[in-house]
Amino acid sequence: MKMFKKLLAGVALAAATATAAQASNINIGGVIWNPDAPLDFSGTSATLSQFINPITGELSGFGVVTTINGTGVGTFCPGCELTVQYGGYTPIGGAAVPGPAGGGSQIFYEGGFVKVYVDHTPDADPTDPLLLNAGNTTDGALWLDMVGHAVNGVTLTGFNFFPSFLLGKGLWDVVGGLAKGNLDTNTKEDGSDLSFTNSFTSFPTDSPLFSTGTGNFKGNSIPEPGSLLLLSLGLLAIASARIRKSS
Image 1: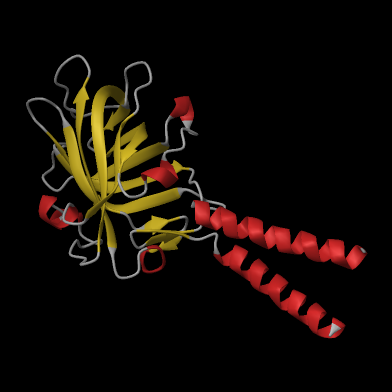
Image 2: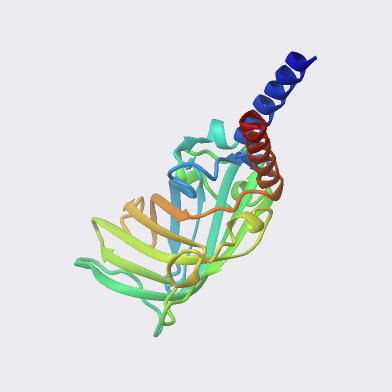
């Protein structure tokens, strides 16, 4: 009987430990990631298209998220896709459009929004930014809703190196979406939730008004309460086993 109890305790301990380890993965709307990953929370979009309004200078565009925490879409979004729509970034001080021979001159923007959608009937081509549009990037469930985070009134800083490339960097605040509870952390610069950079290196019309490129974002994520509970139970089982062994 004593041997059976020891065996039962060992099985329970192993199960609790295994459950706690597996519980670290987060699944929100079919999007899966590990908050304990070294790169958490980060991602890239290898496919971005950007438009600049020739009159107001407002930035807008579309994209497809291609990695999260270093894993590909087949791992973080099996059978689905994460797509992006952004807009509302307006130049401070009036209309400003990147001109030729920019030489790294800066344009400061205010406002801005970014919406990320999870779609379980993928229809956006992650290899061709020329085919991205509102129809195939906003037809899923709203996974993350963000607005530009202003530092001294600036939500995005653009660097004009046209005709070679355009660069941008800024901050976001999470305001809604399925993953709000996991990514609304206020742990980035100035209390923001995520930081981002982008780079546009191709100009299909030989104009800065339309460009394609890539983007990166970084933040932190909060494990789900259920995962924390399972982890606590696993640690409790380990502690109990050690106490019984010492006594």
